[in-house]
Length: 181
Image (cartoon, rainbow, N blue to C red; front, side, top):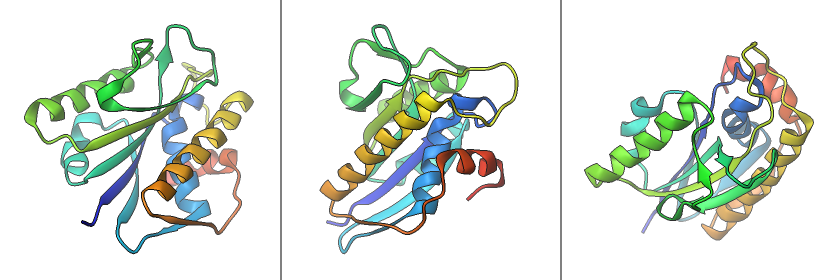
């Protein structure tokens, strides 16, 4: 059976670390080539669209969601990888409006019975500014590179080959995320 896989970056790129899911999805799209004889892969910047993403999410068999998250006992830069059906009890999406909306969106899809397999790769952000900035804090750059390794290793488990084709820094990607990739 052919598996349709989606990497979905979530976040608000205008507020620093808050946009790490989008920046990381763009980093993966620009710097790597993915191939599989059995499966397909798309990488999408979901921004802060939440409920507008329902038709997109439900059109895939498997979704890897990249986002930021909060943990009651976590520290800035901690990285998490878990299944949506098994969210650790210390985690929540209470940091920003887009995070709460994304959780509600996934729960709504689940209630409708259309939820594909959802894996979440997330970090606890440092910069949640009220001022607009594309700057990512150094600790979150490191976290994002760990998130990238998790995603790549997981894609290999799903029968994807991965080749690095460019080496554009995450900060450079973030500086240009508003242009789209």
